Image 1 (cartoon, rainbow, N blue to C red):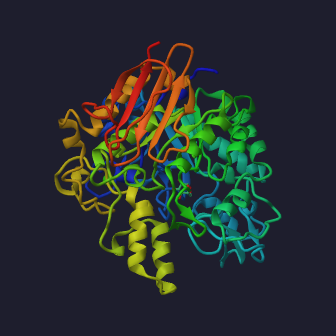
Image 2 (image 1 turned 30 degrees about the vertical axis):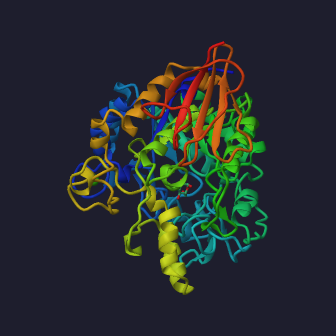
Image 3 (image 1 turned 60 degrees about the vertical axis):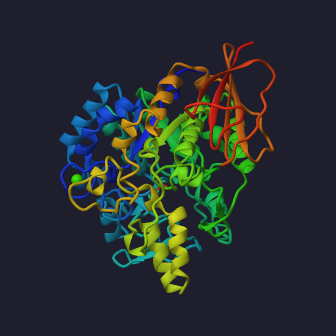
Length: 544
Ligand code: GLC
Ligand code: CA
């Protein structure tokens, strides 16, 4: 397998709106990021992925772009960007930008021109139809075809009404995308995280969907369209191959057996994807707000299945949360009694599975989901749509409050908790989204003072991982199949074998070793006992 920097690196995702505000307007910004570059360097991550910072009316917090060539005013300007990028490079950090090109904002001038007339040269940049050709639903609720009064036609938007889908069939659209990619790459950025990239090729016969299973519709109708690989190969040919860069695709809708079509090295498409196996694991037939339980065996099978499917051909991105999903310690750990223990154990998990890990901002200090006491505190468009729908249908709003506390995207978008001062040291003004009230206890300052903290455990693991290439290139094999308490696997190459074991319960557990003699390499607890302690993770090294 070919060795490269993006396999050996660890990514850290910044959600700029919520990271650090430098000017007291309550919104995180680029100068805020600049002020925290030493913090990131000290933590030990290698690549920063920034959620979108382009100009946007913020219907979907920057994932609705109105100008790909300028910086959102809330975040700063191009001079700030250049300084930030330089600051990163000086510290040996790389920058990956979010590339959102399945759709634009309806305020983008392409769309503004397109809607004016059927004869506009931009009309064909989007999908306009006289009548909605099918029953498609938007991923954020409501119909995916909406009437545009100015256009006098319906247009397609798989996300919000303000996010019209681009028509990639049009070669001019593709050239526009390549051009903007080159613009940022020529500035020196080191790669792209490609938003909903499996959606760029549409089934042009627009078949009807069976919405009794939304996830199924996404997998079969909204993603992996007939020309997606042709488009990505063209993008590789025209842009990607000319730069020393990395690409990670948001792998929504991709099944394990399709993965290497996107990331197989010889395919010349993307370097890696992140899949949704464990993100959809607790979604019922009605989607994410229809929450279902799942056993640990199913969670482990997701990783096993994907690792096997990728094999030696492709590469994966490993994550347990991001700006779209609940906090990992709240979802997969225990954010109450075993908050610290489970946050550390999950850190060990993401940093020892096979693939390039991605840490979402705040995981390193154990930030948790937020339980707002009123629906009025919610800001995310998906949450707001759900609230409207519940109101309209007369459904139980208390129940929705409970659901949003478990599944809402606001959970991961609350401001970063820097210290125990007002608004957690995120802003001197009023934050755009209310700070999680647990900040006096959970914050970076406290974490950095305590040598046994979650933060220090991340720091230690990040260094340790770099010194152990087996954890990067070695094979992966789960050895606790069928066990609902433990998740253990072997990582090995010709030089070393490691046995990594996690206790996914709040009780001490007995455990077995595979054959051979094993020496303890590290534990997520300060001291170990015969049994695995609640939510403990350990690494053993084979000595014979
Ligand atoms: C991706 C982004 C998400 C956004 C959506 C539409 O899933 O991660 O935040 O809302 O695409 O751009
Ligand atoms: Ca600001």
